[in-house]
Image (cartoon, rainbow over all chains, first blue to last red; front, side, top):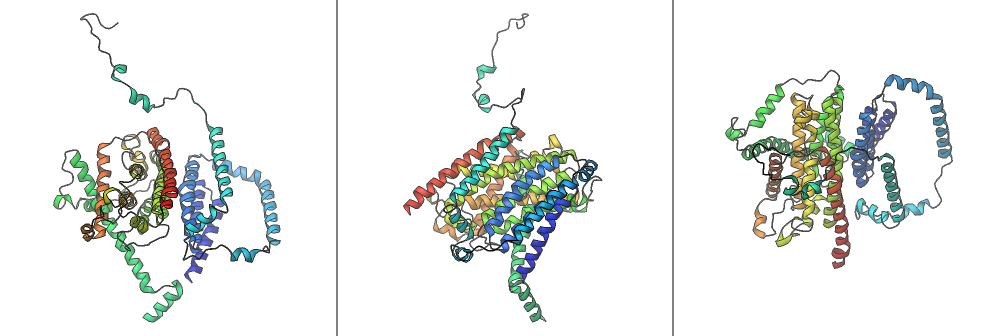
Length: 204
Length: 351
């Protein structure tokens, strides 16, 4: 019973907060609703018995990605009046794109059916929960059957990261940078000189 | 009547009501002593700084000044909570509560002795990592909701700092769990039995030793302790994200921060020093109650935390980033590679 109640609570809150991400006027509130949606999704994973995925969702999305979103969004200086005008102007195009997407999804959903080998797939490979915890189960399948896809996903992320760095990196002039090894290597003689100054002469 | 309640409860939750009450009690049994420990550990902290600076420290309220934290708590409780005019009121008041909640949730998986843990999760170490990575939200939300430049600067610093050091903390946890072969904290502790040199219980006197030092320093950064207390650096940004807070809302930040610090001390003892096991695998030492060993280790680490605060000057922001990304991250990454090589080629090959 509690499982059913929790499912509707988590699912309902997830859908509600996903809608609020779009409808909030303040972008910071949007990010906070996004975090709420992540939390509820991870609650759904726990109800499914997938505690590993639930924890990863919190660590990766809430703990890292959403923090960076928040970081960026807080820095934005948004003029709300301007934003309103934009809505009027771009509404028809947005409606058109949204309408096409909606129609496509309805078409896909309407013609969707289970594949023929579905029962074979369901019957195979899933280990018994009490024998193998799901960290082991995911590891076993990810690093054997799907190793190439997994590595490929990693490479795509690496390329994206390098791309972002190359696009935004610029060498600035006149920046003082601390060179720790230079500081450590500095000897007494580099900085200090004993001069015998005669009285009344001063330094040249 | 009692039967009806019992049956309704069983129908609703699928567990017996006694079980439910027992869980609630065990949560209270951990959470309340943690809050009490926070009050006492603040006193220890101040006494240690005082001793290092050749002062007396708190010595007026109660014997040895032991009641000082309670006096401070009472004083703070009686003050007025001020919400700045331009602040987002809901988020402004939610931030300190979040900070305390995320400081307390991690305690659920910390094992005090074999079987003495609120929730013996399969993925305990991931849960701890998640809880510690969420602590940043209290700070960020506080900084933004205060609608003040100093608070905002503090929040920005905190976000960047905690995200940077989390990465190396994650890799260090990875090395430990690869050697222990489990994500469950109790099993990690049991795997450490006489794992080190001379029958030392724990991974400290093993090749994982450098990882412990990196973890200790990253824990300082993760909990915003000196020398990484840039988010609240007094000389630069007054009190950082706490600047607009007064009364209990400020006290909650302190409670959360110290609860997190003690938790980090516990995590270090569990990951590297054999948790509740005695320091050495020697039979007479096992007669001491296991929880006492854990508390003893946590206390030693906490002493190191205060010692560092009293003796190390604050890092500059670029130095902080350099240390996190250019020193700790590559080092812990190399250690992950070496450890996995050891686990695959030596440990498993030997059986």
